[in-house]
Length: 60
Image (cartoon, rainbow, N blue to C red; front, side, top):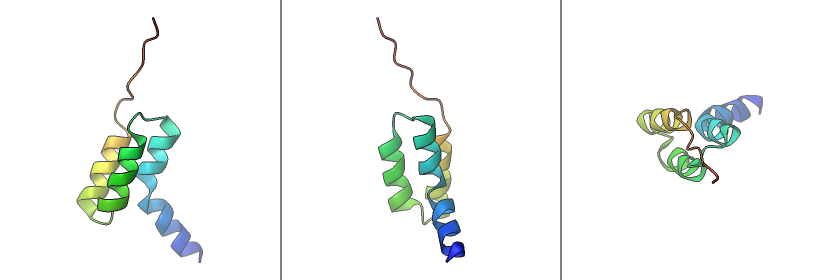
């Protein structure tokens, strides 16, 4: 049971990182991770996207 939970956490690591960082594309990263994360390329894309710069909003 713990092994399955560990696999799920690793699978959704890009989503967890994006949500923890408050990434402005968090939902899109989640969808990419969900739909393409089972492929190695899709998972790597989601991971790189989740650690990229966060858009800063300037309040004037």
